[in-house]
Length: 473
Image (cartoon, rainbow, N blue to C red; front, side, top):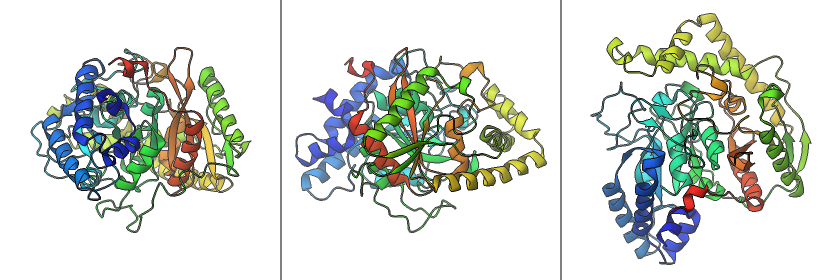
């Protein structure tokens, strides 16, 4: 039973709680047992708090036994939070040797606060690269995190620890952050569902080093679990400058309506990604996934936006490199010697961009946003590949032997950080090596619930499989 609880979707787990057939304490012990079994191989955690988790689980168990007193629909569910998200009482090191190991960590971010108020059971903090600077997960502070589908391959990043944990039951839910794809890259590489919400629907504080590129989102083994998380996480907080104070949407409303009659655009290259850069296995799997939407009654047409010569890769690089340059300047020369050489190189690029290029990128981002707004106004949804490739070797900073300073190897994800639109990834097949491939589902601003609804319709036909490693306990 314990193994079943650890791999059980949250929505099923709380049904067992309600029926008194399982308890939060049993679920938490099951997750801890999996951490003991798998974390030595995967290195998914930067900090574990089993005692705190069991205290929270016992408190939740009392609420469930009283009946009707639970704090939320995910009360008592074991969860992990990425190192980048400030969490009271637990270290938030940003994956960096340059941060203070002694804290203090005396306040929760909005997400941390909302999850505590919802009664979730926080198991610990998961690994990320230094300040989330790259789309893989390794750092001098914590070492490299491995992919549960294949040891020696990256789980992606920068939310790689969260997906490595989630995929094998080291927690039933996971929180990640996304500045250029950092929820969707790792979910694509490890066969999970992940949502980058519309910017600021999940409040972000303290402000990210990546500025308005950054988002916080759920990473889950089922789409319904992500909707349940959004009902807790996506609640207003005055500390987020860009949030809507009246945002109380129920992400489960209409969740099961399916996609029949929806107008969906399928763009194999999003109008700018070179065909030769998209792995053939990825292209075939995504095309087959698109056919599923047709069989479900959606009106699918192949169409791509005309970007008018704009290249989202160049725009994103200018934004994030200049942000990194500002970040690094806040550290003393002594502290900088402790930082990732790749991060410092990106900062050097950013410092040398010049005002004209940075301001031009800001205006180009606005142009791109308008173009994409007008494109998605013609459709309910847009489908693309999530990543042009599958998981590559650990300890590489980027795909194709890149140094990570150019984030252009993840073109499909970064585009929607620039435009602020909701974008999710869901597994849609395996490549020739048996590694997961992701399908990206995008909608217009604040249509996050529609993205979840469409992903759920696909999931009912193509359930999300667990990695073989998850069954080795």
